Image 1: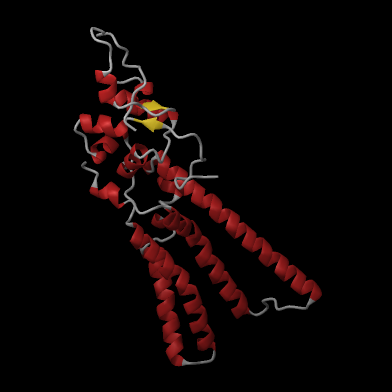
Image 2: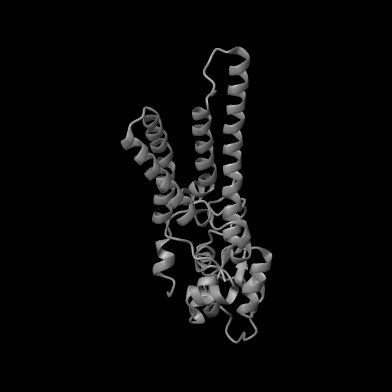
Length: 157
Length: 103
């Protein structure tokens, strides 16, 4: 039994929604901190959107061709594809995190540029890393793979 | 450098999968089910966009009850019709291993 991958357009939409949710949540959170009641509700709604994308739509799981627990259901091409996406995501994420650590270390030592210090600043960084790290392999997959409509249309050919 | 399928780019393999599948009257889904792979993988194989592992190549050859070199080749196959009709007259023993193909 192999896994049928959701349509490319659906996977791309989910990844874009998840990627956009972070700046939206950040902006709404910033406004919430300024004690606007409307934005407090919007913050809850945006958080619910992220939960829906991650937990219900499983962007980070199905989007990147299923999590590790389902390896046995992937064929060799799907496994190779997913592993390549993991590798590329690891390289990008590793580079960004390393640059971030260098930025903070130098910022603390030299004190000449901004470094996060408050709870809210770290909170935003945490959620940014969380959202983008889990969706990065999905993003690699959905934009690297070409649309294969002919496979669907010609499967009985 | 990697292909879009994640496998390291290597020499292109040619195959007769599409012809053999059509000849047997199989859909991509049926062939995929018989091989235990996704039907999209069959499409990638037929287009020569994915080189199968040795194990999958052998399974495909076994399914069609052909030697693996009759299904896969490192050089383009000549068309089957050309192979069939270009045999010397009276030569009923012309080797089927003569390189031929459809891609």
